[in-house]
Amino acid sequence: MKDYPFSLWVYLSQSPLLWLTVTLLVYATTDAVSLATRRHPLANPVLHAMWIIGAFLLVTGTSYTTYFAGAQFVHFLLGPATVALAVPLYENRKRVVSSIVPMLVALVVGSVTAVVSVVLLAQFAGLPRDVVLSLAPKSVTAGVAMGIAESLHADPSLTAVAVILTGIMGAIIVTPLMNRTGVSDFRARGFAAGLAAHGIGTARAFQVDEIAGVFSGIAMSLNALVTSFLVPLVVTLLVR
Amino acid sequence: MLASLSLILLCQLIGEAVVRGLGLPLPGPVLGLLLLLILLLARDRFALLASGPLGNDGVESASKGLLAHLSLLFVPAGVGVVQKLDLLASHGIAIVLVLALSVVLTLLATVLTFRLVSRLLKQRDAQ
Image (cartoon, rainbow over all chains, first blue to last red; front, side, top):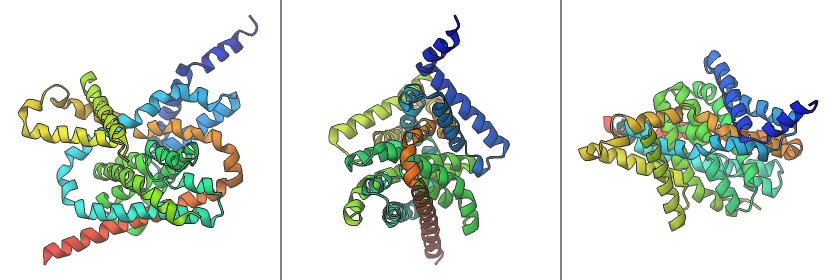
């Protein structure tokens, strides 16, 4: 009976239940801390959940594949959550329709800036070609970005990491940066957050202001469209 | 609640099917979003549609429930960073700096363009 706790661990660590529970518990904790700090940007719940769970996996020697077997149930909801963005969009349709022109111009300028800047900066930093390609779609939501990376024969799992890092940095930086630029229009601020930092930026925008959240959701969906066309073009033109 | 969730999944399913079937370069859930939006707008026109998940705030409250914890949904993909520790050890600083600079440039370009265009439009309307 001596090795009973160990065999229990072996059993549990292979089951989806444990890793789903860990994901929810850790996030519930980091989210509570974020709330307690009145949503301070540096208390970003995704950032802290990520390293805590990651460290836990490394310490227990658990593979990401095993972890993902449990966490996939959460990951799956990314799709339905994208569909659900229709509701805030519908409820704020009048404001959205009245800002259609600035939105579309900002969409084009923002998407081009996102892709061109990352490709040029990554080449300037001397990163290997496959890394440059994997970083290119980093401003769109994870599922779409990974699809783009696949079509470029880059590394989709590196793209996923770049997407999440971009989202977290965008979410942390957006409020102080916007306060510094003196833009108080929450439509513009939200639109920028969703365009540059997809769903994580949108989650942040909803924490700050409902209108910002709505515009962020629109930017995220539109950018997914534009970037799918833009990345192959920019890569052919700019990547050596 | 169950009917509302089914409606959301159905929109996504149709979106995925159409995207795959026609080989469109856009993500299935984005088409699903458009579909749900069209349904909600059609409901305002045709009272007949205001039943089941489309009546009594059904799909609205289910959607808000999903969106309330949007950041949680990115955690599983984010933990994938543990698979990339070798690459981060060799190129991590450069990658993080490149992404950080690019995100700042993108935020600024987008917000300033949005503000500039909406101001120009306001001036034109005032004249």
